[in-house]
Amino acid sequence: MHCGFIKLISGLVGIKVDDEMSRASRIPAGILLLTLSIVPFVFDTTPLIIVAVATFGFIECFVHTMGIRLFRMKRFYTPGMVTAWLEFVVSVMMIAYLAVNDIARWYDYVFGPLLMIVCFGLLQKTMTLMVGIRYSDMPKMIRTQWTRCD
Image 1 (cartoon, rainbow, N blue to C red):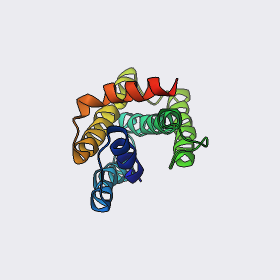
Image 2 (image 1 turned 135 degrees about the vertical axis):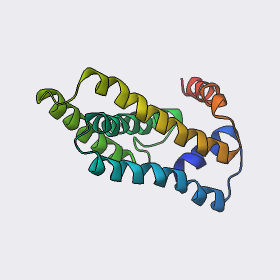
Image 3 (image 1 turned 90 degrees about the vertical axis):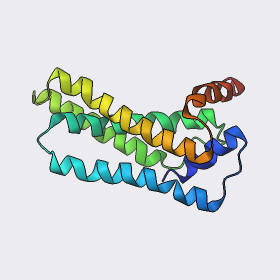
């Protein structure tokens, strides 16, 4: 899943990543996906968790779509983009369902995304550390890559 992320990040910073590291990067991504798959069934009446999972769909869609420009892809496609767009559609439907049926409260819509952003940030931080860079350096590197695309 995020094996491609490791290769893209390593290419961005000029670090060679071997196949073992690439395969190992699937572990933190697998943990997040497993958590996202199981937790909503355990806490199926907790709108906060539903909003957090929906936020993941929004984040994935944004990341995969922006990755096209950021990494100057030749085609309008990144690995996982189709799944990310499907997740986006399902996420919109989940939020709409919560809103129309007045199930979630304001704090669910505030803390659900914060919970997912923290989990997603920890995943990305773990993966960048696996490559050998600090996560705090990522915004500068992405900004540099972004300006090259202009």
